[in-house]
Amino acid sequence: MHLNPYGEYAVLMAASLADDWPEDRAGIEARTRAFGMTMEFAEASDDHERTRRVVDEWLRVVDALEPGERARLLNDLMARATAYPRLTDHGGEGWHLHYRDDANDSLPDVLRAVISVGTALHLTTRGIHRLSRCAAGQMDGDSCVAVVVDVTRNGRQRYCSVRCANRAAVRRHRSRRAVTVP
Image 1 (spheres, rainbow, N blue to C red):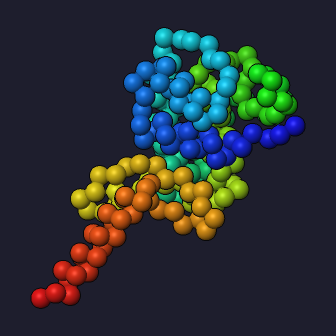
Image 2: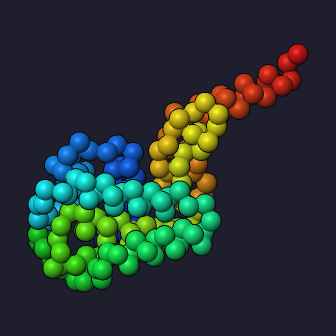
Image 3: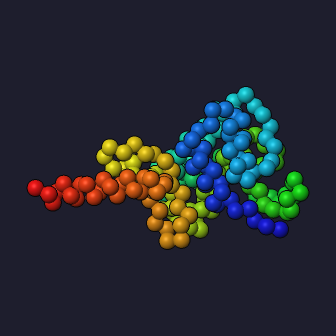
């Protein structure tokens, strides 16, 4: 039996959905496959809209600045998931744990369970501070709002990409230089 690495892949999947929202339900399902989810989802006409609400609820956790508030929001999200861990051997993958309700296999409900539990595992094992928005977007004139899922060893990732980190460094350099050059 192996334990699915819900923490990392689920949070990275949520960030991917938040940063690049798919046009339709098929796009959401393709994204789940890209992040390793293999189950089939029952289809409903409101899956796209309901999944967007799940991602927006999760973004409230990302944007919470105080650890207690972040924990409260995440606990609320997990409570609404109404799923519990269970052993499964679907698809010939071998026995492993899933965090979802077998009776409710809708795309939004499964994603709520997987993303909320994955986020809780990520924040409790790596640190409550290891989820944020890109620091470049906090600088004047930068509009980046990408989610940063810090999976680094030292826990100090602040930018969504090397491009944003470089752009911020150039801004800091130019700002210091403008102050020191008469």
